[in-house]
Image 1: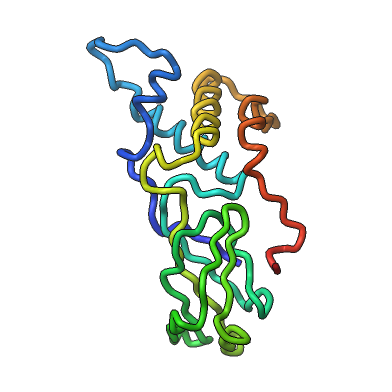
Image 2: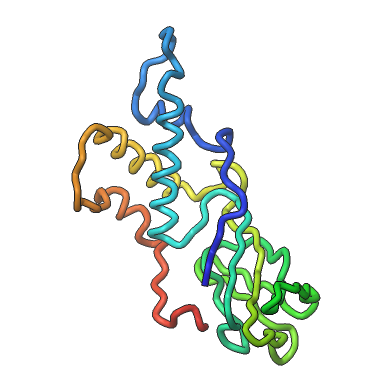
Length: 198
């Protein structure tokens, strides 16, 4: 299984101004904006960490999921949530010939934690021997920072602030989540014990 992010979050979608207010940075100085690049990087790192811990895509992006076989004939759980739409499904053979699956043969079953792709008939179409399945989909709470649930947005700001405070310190082996962040994201974490089969 390979999950690839096809689009990235634009700098304009990141809450740099809100992050500056969170850090209580001064305004009106001649060097205002000098640290915007650093703040953007810290926000991206914090957002990636929160997404990894929760399995949730915060800001809308497009993804590609490549599999060797279907995970269950009655449907399979998609690797991240929330999924907004399945945009394409292709079956690819050993020679890289692609066959686009008719969108009428599958459907998205939306869910905040475990969105599923289900066949509309009795089963998904067969995968060519030695081939693969390529699923393109759009995921995320929305394109704007205001679309993200408040607790997840606050977790990103807290974690980015933590990264900002300790940006000059190297602490090998310390991958501890600050308590405030872990408390905010706990209800969003999804525990998968089925390996994505159901």
